[in-house]
Image (cartoon, rainbow over all chains, first blue to last red; front, side, top):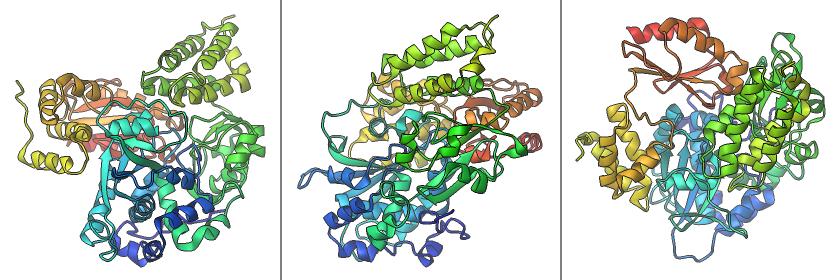
Length: 416
Length: 159
């Protein structure tokens, strides 16, 4: 079931060290890279169908194509390593076990979009991983791999700077991330009417997830054909899927898209602990509609299949819930998370998350009634599509799905 | 007037950060991190100092420092325990770990122990769901926690 592209070197001892990385194929895409034009690199990535691995799944190549041509302003690559979605712990594997793969991907991407400085924004709590990555960047500078020339030979300048966040989930939203990188509160920006690139101090910028960037060297080296032979026609390639909760082997496993969720749970995840029955799975980080045990049987791990059954693939980080867990507790736990992490900019989100939190507390205290569930659904409706970013719609997705799919679990808490 | 200033080493680091960005505005978070590393928390005096260095008003620094939960706006205990409370950790027994910490150190989330040795924070997802339950102790991740492991770590801190 495992297909290793990004995680190929993870199990090699000291894989994070430059010497070991070089001996195991890192930076081997660079000669091919500089034999191509930047537009050819972008075209190859577009042809590969590579999709953003941070949750949205937007096509990567077309995103690069949004960068303005012949613009006198400097362009920037911003790598999103904020990784704060509950159930998601994949990018840290790249920082820890193959930081040079990320650096290699950054070189490829900078060349394609003509950027000479890349910022890697990493959540503040990932101190160990930040230190690990900084060591690798230092090694790369000292070896002349990055800096004023690439691999001491190619006349292309790439600087890389790691930027440490301060513990705010919303900074994983790309425009909030840039606000934060500009030294402000992480408040998402209003989106433009048409498609355009991002703007970092009014300079053109592209924001890509860590795993997306780490997928690029393989595409450069082996061509789009080497990537599309894995996965499905619309979701080509592989993804670092994660599984957590009461399963025997929680962890991160790289698979091609298109595997069955139930096989992932039972084969790589090792099945449920203590022979417990499965109740539900939240598929890709907590911001996706929940799947009941019956729905899990049908679920296939690619973007389109997940949409077809009314959920999303998200970050591919699955949270497994067993029969003994109360779904009201699950909803309360997650709404506390969203209530705490709402940036407070938009009223429906700031007030809505707090409101649902209070209602669920009331229900758990045995003081709720059926009418409260209608109020929750009503608040969800008010949050959906009426805010600057997709935080509030995500809250609606998870909370509404729990209320609609497990209403009987709320019933037992109602007074009388 | 501010009576805080960076150590010589941190001043060098600050200047290095300034050289890495197109505008000095970006140095806001790195500057606050340097303060916290030096002081253990971000004091009002330090915020004024940072504002001065970045060409900002103190309120601009304050509004950033108060937005990001990792900046301590008050001094905290010597050893900071950040216990993850979000779903995967909850499902794998974070409540049991919390109760045990409460019993052995005698503090609730948000409190510092009387001897000033420990501070407990309950935090949202730390991105270690595969190692649930977990906490960060002084920034270092400890995963797949058991009561025995917690006891060992606490003992280590008391040495």
